Image (tube, rainbow, N blue to C red; front, side):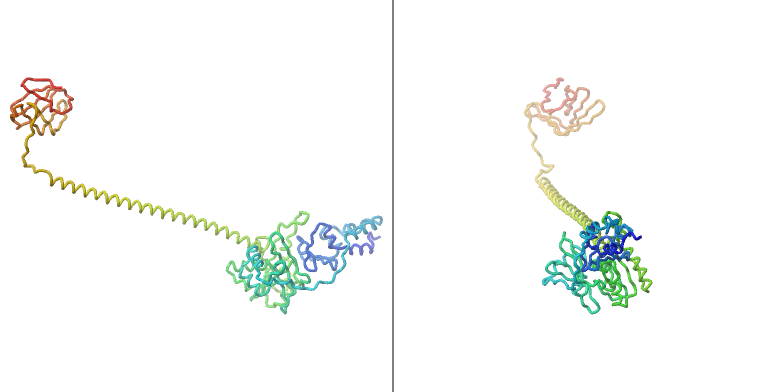
Length: 476
């Protein structure tokens, strides 16, 4: 006997898949006519058909398959979650689930229409793409001129446009430019078989997930000296290869495909558990698939999560290096300025030294001139001078003398000796000598000799040494 009837199975498949996802804690984002669930490798819900498809795992279905894939339930557990367990619970559980997951009324497919364009300059577009996202201004300007991107009005979103074979817009994606209020989503009615593309001149195609990633990849090519216009670049807008198939049909000259998808390493599911690396898994699957179709394929993985993060990281590192180089240049300049100041100080010191030397030379010249003047005014040697008259009867004048120290004898040679008596009679001055021996001073003045006893360490003028008689007297 079957555990669940065909009616129960039919009722389970009629449960609104969009409402079921919301009740399970997911936050589907509107992408045109579909809804995207993050962190699940390109999982989209088509609310009109009440179905889903996961591009990374290439699996899809209705509510039952959704629970089996996302919640890891088997078929029986998924049915129990949708319609209950057993006949006694069936009616009440089914009624509750129908109310909780009631499917909204089907709406007609939306007509594709591009958002209105900003009539004035694209100031916010350029500010967001070049400053916030770090994209090259010349590349952004080129895309604006080709009408690949524009700024919408009145919300000032950046609109990335995809064209068909005839150049008619068939797909568009919007990105908000207001900081702190992130917004992104497909324009209603977009055809997912077309995508944002940057046509190149060669036979090589690079495939990215998002339009900003494709532009960032081109900016990196230019930054490192490459010719970015040689390669074709497209943005899948997820992990479906339908846009790739269409682009290859439109450009049969392409021979080589590089899959530059996101690196979702470290991604988390809503419950906090590790998520698969959807981007790289899809890149490996696509590379193998198109290799078998005859294309040369390769995988290019960013060091960061995506190519825009890669571009911003490189710019940040280079900015830090520029700041370090500027600091080194500033320090070098300060060192040079310090050397210049030292040189200036040395020059000033040299100038002061030269000025002082000039003053010294001037003083020497003045001194020399004074000596010459003194020499000219000095009396001649042979000019006779009147002898000085002494007031005492007998007085000795010692003008210039020289003392020779020996063991016990001190000798004073008198170079000039003058003596006169009270009557001013001259005495013999042929030989004048004074000798210190012990404590006695022998004075010889011509033929007249007298002994005068003095202290050995006597110092002073000898003007008061007077010997009026021939007798020996003590003089202190």
